[in-house]
Length: 237
Image 1 (tube, rainbow, N blue to C red):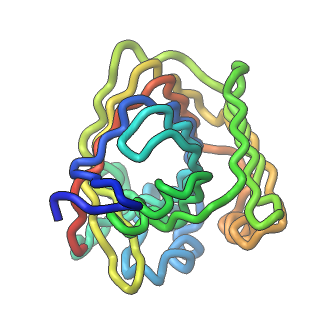
Image 2: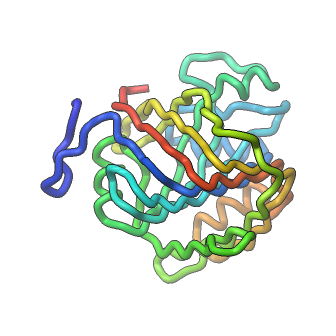
């Protein structure tokens, strides 16, 4: 599957994002609670510390890419690669992939493309991104209900352009768990310990987050003024 027809357009692998603004908050959560959330995938969470998993919340303004311009919110967990035995600690985190549990977007083309090409759990939602001020904010509503209101406080600059080590993303759709090769190059990155304020609403995803222990202090938060990404062809995990 080197390419796929989506709404009359041919999309080729790798799918590229040429310009996006990314904000994220990383939270320590109970490993047993995180396992319960992603049990349907057949994957296991990576433990940064014994009994502690890692949940990532992020919001993205995709300004230029093969799937057009759109807004996105993501809820994801660090996971062990399939078939790899676990041992809590930094080594486990370094080799982890990221399992995408929920990925609402606000445009129909990327919704269909994400589901069809990779099995990403994309849904349509109201994603209000407020990125013009120093503080970056996402107000997310789904089906008329508030999911969350997340505020990120930018931290200290990370000098130069930073290329992340390629990482595998994992998805699960229609009973199949897939591995998606993923790479990111970041410019204008900032990192801050803590740095996130979150208010949960009354949506079922907000209930999941509360069962993971949120609201709580984030481990750290990041902002990236300009990110470039590449998403490869998926394979069964």
